[in-house]
Length: 226
Length: 263
Image (cartoon, rainbow over all chains, first blue to last red; front, side, top):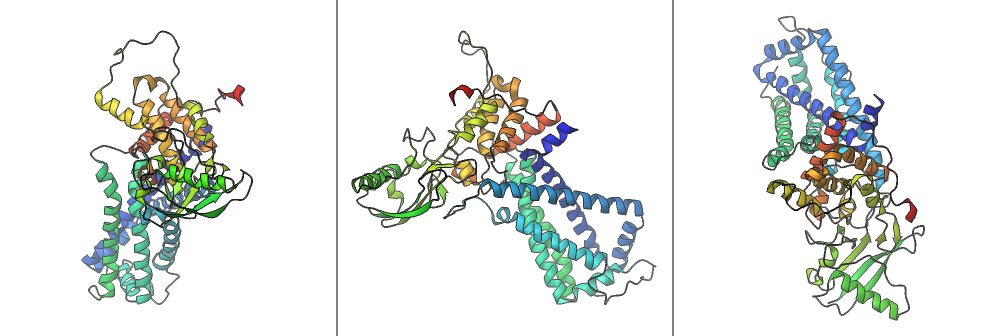
């Protein structure tokens, strides 16, 4: 066990754990987006889906605690690595020119921090319901919690639309470097498939952002109504 | 040609450095960047000023001594070459050129543009070699190596250890250097017996020297004078993971310094 922790404390060991936890979180984000797309099927589908997720308290809380733990590990190790990286160059360059580094790769710490704030806001808003108390928790005709109504109510407010779209931009930037970078850190490399691996990050990022933004915009523009 | 040079001057490791502006007159477009600096130094010497200290040796792009960050890019604006292979015709007449040393905690500045790259040597001492009993030379073609393997090993082995990867990296990480060394030996049968120990020991040595960690931005590949691919970084990660999972073994201990007598 001591040996195991010894390897985690190395730079590569920490990076591997950041990559694995990041992939798990990205996986959640993808399924979260796919599940929420049921909004387009109408109130019944989304509310039944939400009830299905909530109906299994063991699974729900395992997922919640698991995600919290994974996110904690991801953030903790990333902060530790960022501190090491800052220390590695005490005096910076007067002139700096980048050739390869993408905007997304250069802003991982910033987008990561903003993403954390956005996730906290999102949880307080739609999960805990503390941000916006103007929509009462109510049941739909089948006796499920009216998640559909809550979402529609939220995105009829331009302020929430702006915050959530900004959140999507940040999420997209973070994901587009994160996924391909994780594969590299885990040693996934192939002379022919490398292009696929490098493109995977931006591709998934675009899919997630488009899916999520579609929900927000559809409600904002009144295409989906309560 | 005429240039305005902003050069980092620093008297010693503990001194505070600053940029000093010089004018380079009568520069031929066919001069290499180092020859241009020679001319500037000549003029400084004639004026009784201290010449600018910079490192060089072979001046043909194979030794890895030159270490100048030119206008924010290690080895200058051209790709796949060292600073000594850069010619002044690459710059427009009258241009302002900023020249800085490699900047990293692991590369302390000795003087002006000269940095101490001993950290890379110590990483090599930790595992960048194969252990063999010396004796009669091995017959040729005893160990047959496939062409593809030989090519991969050769690509990695083309690293000249200049440290441009560290200088270019946002995090001052030496991953490309270590990756090239580890992949080179791991691709060949001679390096096979020690590959697990090597990967762990070299990564541990890299961390010990205070290099940053890899952010997969691939700036290193873009400035490497030998254009060494970041694929080798993935190979290093794989080597390290394999070494950790398959052969947990003891965490790489601090190796005894083989050159302890000489310093």
